[in-house]
Image 1 (cartoon, rainbow over the protein chains, first blue to last red):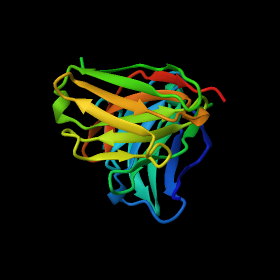
Image 2 (cartoon, rainbow over the protein chains, first blue to last red):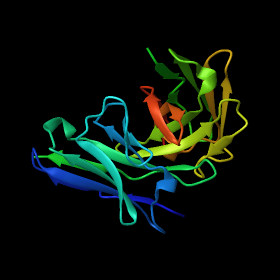
Image 3 (cartoon, rainbow over the protein chains, first blue to last red):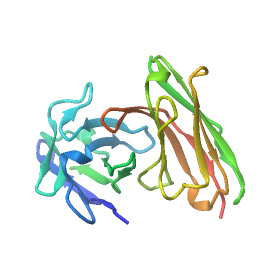
Length: 110
Length: 118
């Protein structure tokens, strides 16, 4: 069974740049998986950040960017801020209408 | 204001049933597919099910296939998730989320909590 993989945790300094990745246990992520990214702080509802690999959702600052890096989808935060400290989830479309979330990355800004 | 509001959560014994509802407002409900996504305590997001605008395309995660049934009533701007044969691993906050093309979610409800004790 295919699993969507994400780093369990990551740390970045304020003002720094961090790239979170989203891969597959078997195979490569491509634009055909329509990667999307969601941010969630504890106790809150998920917020949509990015869709279709690199399109920012309404109101998302341009320091968030999406791409395909090698065989993975990637979310890059440039100039990290304290309120970027959250859990980040990617979601892939696996075909036939099936969506899969990754396990999430807990980002710490310190 | 575009809004999704879930209801119907609660405590149910293993093997029992529960019906969740999702009420939409602020947008043309009949023009959007809707997803259910759940989150177990301290765990990540898990996609559960999707229903298209006219309910002619329905998908389920393997973990719930055969036990959960998604349906919608466009006249009432509402969506249901009938959950049968519940297990302790179904314990989670259940969110409904508006589907957008291609294959992402842009509006989320605040969720309703389902608890199935072990």
